[in-house]
Length: 119
Image 1 (cartoon, rainbow, N blue to C red):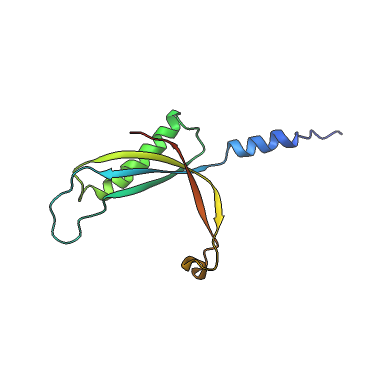
Image 2 (image 1 turned 120 degrees about the vertical axis):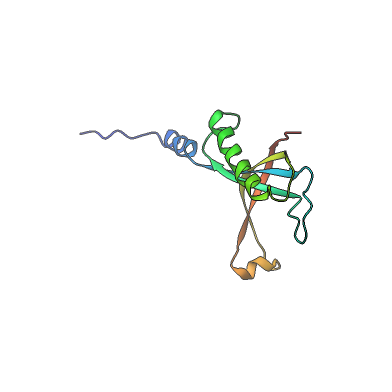
């Protein structure tokens, strides 16, 4: 019997297509509530992962789920929020021994690239 062998490049493309990409989107506070003590952050990064392509409905749903999650965490301090730039993880960068995180066991950190602004 002859085995069906998949072309290496096609197999590689199929694996990459189903891999999740890591993203984050910036959220900025629009007005802050009057509180005593801690007043919350001025901006946060809403991290999320999805295999969907940028601009598709599935991508927008994953992005808005992350935005809603971080909004729910900060709505006790914020009156509203503004959505900032979107970034995608492009790889990892090695950490040198001069960095304090090197001695905590971190040998690399992610590198992000801006996709497009929402402003």
